[in-house]
Amino acid sequence: MRGRAIIGLSILAVLVFLLYELREVMLPFVAGLALAYLLDPLADRLERLGLGRLAATLLILAGFVVGLVVVLIIVVPLAAGQIASLVNSLPTMVGKLQSILVERAGPLLQRIGGAEVVNELQSSVGTLVGQGGTWFLAFLKSLWTGSQALVSIASLLVVTPVVAFYVLHDWDRMIATLDGWVPPRHRPTARRLAGEIDGAVTGFVRGQSLVCLILGSFYAVGLFLVGLNFGVLIGMISGFLTFIPYVGTLTGFMLSVGVALVQWWPTGDWLHIGLTVGVFLVGQFLEGNVISPKLVGDSVGLHPVWLMFALLAFGSLFGFLGLLLAVPVAASIGVVVRFGIERYLESKIYRGDGPVLIGDSGNPTLPARD
Image 1: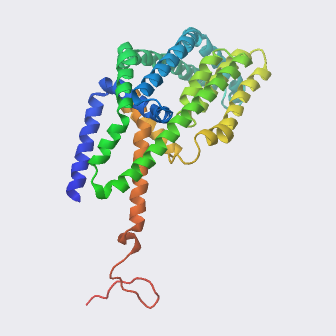
Image 2 (image 1 turned 120 degrees about the vertical axis):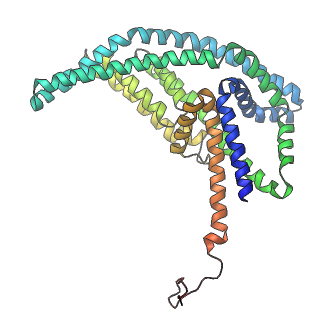
Image 3 (image 1 turned 90 degrees about the vertical axis):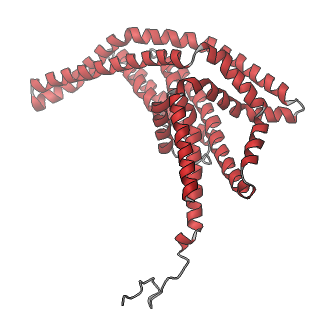
């Protein structure tokens, strides 16, 4: 048992090391594998309708590529224009936000600590907001350069669809081969664990993807109708980050409130500021009570804290590749841990089977020493 554990941990360590070293090369392959995994149920349904596996695969991928191109043609120019406007307007917005904060907090602090405290606050706020703006610009620049380095045009248009085509076409054969490698006496357990992992991953990814799409559209349309500057961009960012629980809503809320204060505070337009806040309150209510319970449900088995840690940790280590792998790995670890706890609760170690001495009180006692 100890030897098997050492071998298994060694193989896992080698795989993690290779994944880290080849993370930039493996992205299109992992993306293609993920795409095939998500589209396999649709291919199975088309097969049941009478199409062959090859025809179903070609039809699905052709529809996916056409839909993706249409979305990119519509979304990318709009997002690029808003990002350029945001970058150009950021210094002015930072200065206005600094003035608003100092103006509102200054009188109170002046009564408490005098003019020196107000000057210190102004200097600190200016430094903090300025550093935040610099960090945001650097973050946008890193996203652009990183996406150029990691996701090349060849990867998007050639490698990923080709990998997805072959994997989707041979998916059932690959699963059957992996199942045949498992010793017969362990196959029921392996199939059970694989089914639970598949249910957790598909339940979260498909459901949460729809949640991101719905909320992103809602926030973008709502902020656009309110008249918020960069509302469509903030809405799309919020929807995209909703994949990480609570992060999308909080990020969008802080961005939108900051822009709303700069835009409408000087004129005393509290109505539009309240409408901006109301968009996120309604969106959060719909997400927590209607959208997520219907689309994701409670059977995913991934705790939000564990999921946030996995996404942030894998994203930090492996970049965009880590984001693709975070949910499957987190779901797999969760299923294995629950299985191990279940076996432990059924074991003799937990039940205490064996030669245990029972005293008069009915509690286990230690044998007396000579």
